[in-house]
Image 1 (cartoon, one colour):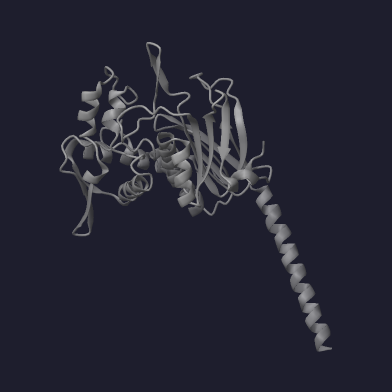
Image 2 (cartoon, one colour):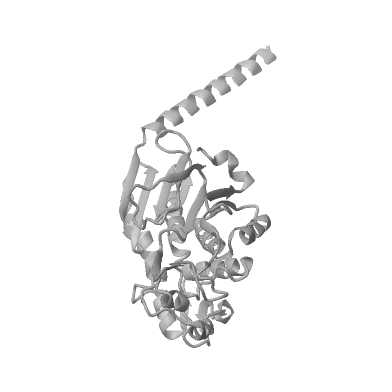
Length: 343
C-alpha cells in the first residue's frame, strides 16, 4: 500500500513538472522580442531582446555612461581629462577597463596598447590627419607611449590613475565598443532577460535563443577593398550564444599614398602600420571587451603569433582570414569553433 502511494506521488510530481515546464515555455514564447537601434561612439548599435517592455532609454543611458568615460571626442569624458591633466580619480568602470587593458597588453607582449594614439594620429587614422611620419618622427612618437607609465594607486579609498610621462595619451577605441556591448548585456541580465543579442559597431554579445528559438547566427564579412558596406559578402556564419564576438580587419579602413596602401592597424612595438598576410581576425570570448581587444592584438601580431596566444588561452576561439602563398584568401579557425560554423 505504501509502495503504491509512493509511486502515485512520484507520478503526480512528474506530471506537475511537465505541466509547469509547458506553461513556462508557452509564457516565454508569448513574450515579444524588442528591437532598438541608434548611434553611439561614432557608430551604430542594435539590441534585440525578449522582454515585455522597451528598454531603449535605459540602453541609451548605459551607453552614455560608457561614452562619458572613454570617448576621446567627448571634451568632458574621463579619458579626455586624463589626457589633458595626466591624473584623474577613476570610477570603478574606468579602473576596471584600464586594468583589463593592462592585462591584455601583457598577454599579447605589447601588441595591444591603449597609449598608441600619437602614432594612430600621425598615420592619419585618428581625429587628426597629418603628413606621414618619417623614421625620426616615429621614434620620437614612440617615446610618448608606454603602458608602463600608467600608474594606478589607492588613496584614501579612491582609485587614482596618473602618469609622470609628459604627453602620454590613453585611447580606448580598440576595446570600448566591446565593453559597451558588455554593459548593455549586463543591463539585460539585471532585468532577468535570457534571450538577447547586442551589437555595437560589429562587436556582439549574444545570449540564449533568437525569435525562432534557435542559436543566434552571426556573419563574418568576407574581406574586400570596398570601403562601403554595400553588397557585403559573408565569409561564414557562426552559431554564437552565451558568448561575445568581435572582428578586426584591415580590409576597409585604409588609404593609399601614391601606389602604397596603408592599413589602419598600427604595431605599437614598431610604430608602423602592420605588413602581414592576416586580413581579418574574429575572436569569440566570454566578454566582448576581451574579444574586441584580442581581435585588435591579433591583427597586430599576425596569424602565427596569434596562434601562440590562443594556445595559452583556451577560453578564446578565433576565425582568421588571410592571404595564402597563392595570393588567394584562406581561412584558419580554432578547432573548438568547428561545431559553431553554420556555413
